[in-house]
Amino acid sequence: MLRFLSSVADLWIGRNRDPSPEALAAVGGRAPAVVVTGASRGIGRALAMRFARAGRDVALVARDADALARVAAEIARAHGVKAMPIALDVTALDAPAALDAALRAAGLYADVLVNNAGIGLAGPFAENAPEEIDRLVALNVTALTRLTRHALPAMVARGRGGVLNVASLGGMAPGPHQAAYYASKAYVISLTEAVAYEARGRGVRIAVVAPGPVNTGFHEAMGAENALYRTLIPALSPEAVAASAYRGFCVGRTKIAPGVVATVSAVALKLLPAFVSAPLMGVLLARPERPR
Image (cartoon, rainbow, N blue to C red):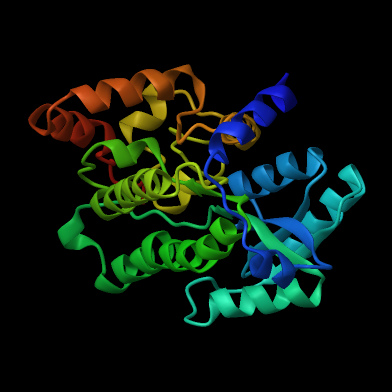
């Protein structure tokens, strides 16, 4: 059924496609791959697994070469596809060109780009270290933007491809105590929806997945494990998020909120004015002091 729905979506998504012979020739002799950033663990690893399960070759991008090699071997063994590890810091200025070069050397090209790499930052904004804010913006916003801008023109010219951005349910509301993180994910959602409209009918799927809490260690890493939302809101597994994101992407949805709780919350947050949602989120996101 998913394959049928995906085929139907292809017809609508590509209703105005106009493939360029030059663009098609530029990737002649190379195989299409799904490029996943932040693929060494968590949602990125699960997304790479899900695309591989569908028979897609994958390129796994992250800084940890050893972890990437382990995930690539696991994917290749489980699904019989090509799984290429690319150890790369996506915040580097030359990252898009370096990624292209690595793919070309392996006989691949980016048919689908999954922008998953990201970090969180908790605590009052005025107490966040400036260098930590800079690092978050560089990864969550700038790197995603540059990689998307680099890959998209060739996809449109070929009349096929896709970009799947990983945001957060938090991007739909102001986030006191995680202000920079929530703002970065709001940017990702807004950018995705705007670019999806611009590229409508050109054969390129453009979508954003906005999960609520996910059991990946992400919240613990930014010191938010004791925040109230971690107790009140059920967390999904990375695999559940990946499955929902993959289904939504295949059928041509632009915004995907995995799970019933995220779907209902997304609607509620859209309807609530900021003077209600900000204090509500402030209560949910406030983090008690960690035990010393």
